[in-house]
Length: 123
Image 1 (cartoon, rainbow, N blue to C red):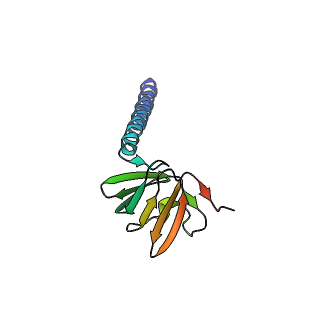
Image 2 (cartoon, rainbow, N blue to C red):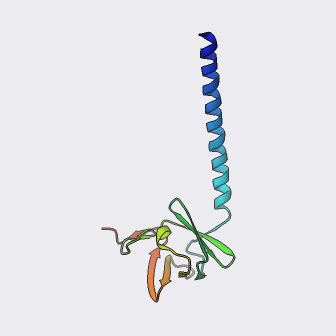
Image 3 (cartoon, rainbow, N blue to C red):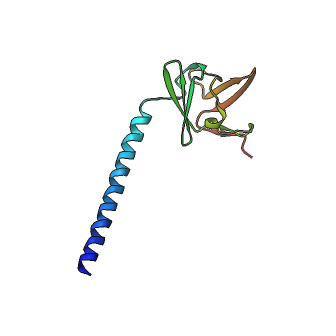
């Protein structure tokens, strides 16, 4: 019985250690992932066609030309897909002027808009 309880304690310690190490690795890998993109803020101006989209939780990472932009938290409930990360498609044209928080999305001759960091038109 003493051998069994020692083995159980060792097993629990090993499992906890593996969990802690995996959480630390997850933190550093996520930090490295987010540092590759430029976060789209009010001071950045962009114009272009989306070449690639990656979704990471609520954020959309879009590639325009050779730059990647991180856009987090822009929702407009006037659209059937209100969350920007699920609304955007490869081939959409987007634009945002400097010192402006409005992101315009152009698709099939229609203009859609989202406000960076805000949820709009939610009843």
